[in-house]
Image 1 (cartoon, one colour):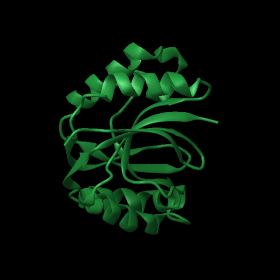
Image 2: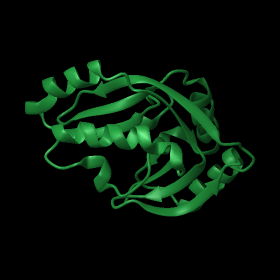
Image 3: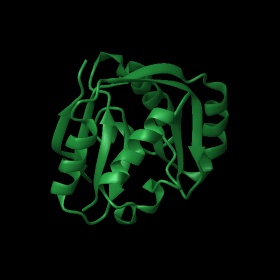
Length: 175
């Protein structure tokens, strides 16, 4: 079972992402993000086989005294794969990259899924993750025409297992 450390938007300003989830889901057979039954988030690190206690210790050390993070987004990007993934792009990802590096200072990056390693990780907030190839062109046109400008305040860090998403430990960020 995979595990992850994620920044979560657990407050009322999540509406712009929830709206994008609903809009983008029209390109999917079934709404992928709503199916998670989990709030908008940024995945910082994914691990296939790790003791959850290592996640908990890293989350406490990195986030224990941290304040909530307002992150501004400026558009919609995509990851091409078998199923197209659409995601919101942070305007300035320096703080996210610093946080990501701090996690990897606590947990060996070699234990991390390859896409979450420091040399490969792309900070993003997923909007849709299962767009079939037959809908990809239409979805990309929609993404290019959609401004995707909003700010989310990430106020919780979760250590989770998935699927389904199960919160194993929560660290609330200071207001």
